[in-house]
Image (cartoon, helix red, strand yellow):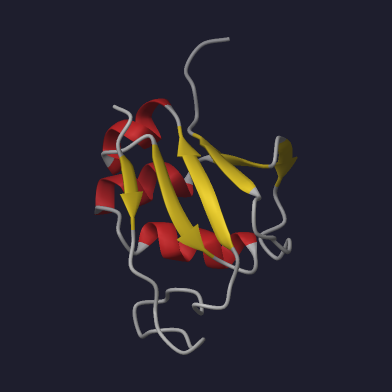
Length: 105
């Protein structure tokens, strides 16, 4: 699976009713791994979000309920650094990695 999901952005810098980030928000590359990629149906996506929370909301707006469940239990790396602060500011060029829970040790 090396399919990339390109999502249309909302217009005029305002959020839509689907929870998408404003079009003026940074574009973030998302890489999904293992079960998150399998449920989402792609290994990568492009989303918009000024914060980790906004980027996740944009990602989840295109996700099935099963994918949303896996992503909701996942850990996140922002540009290679573990991040649990959903208010963390994002910038153009940041990369968000979605790491689902793994079984075993």
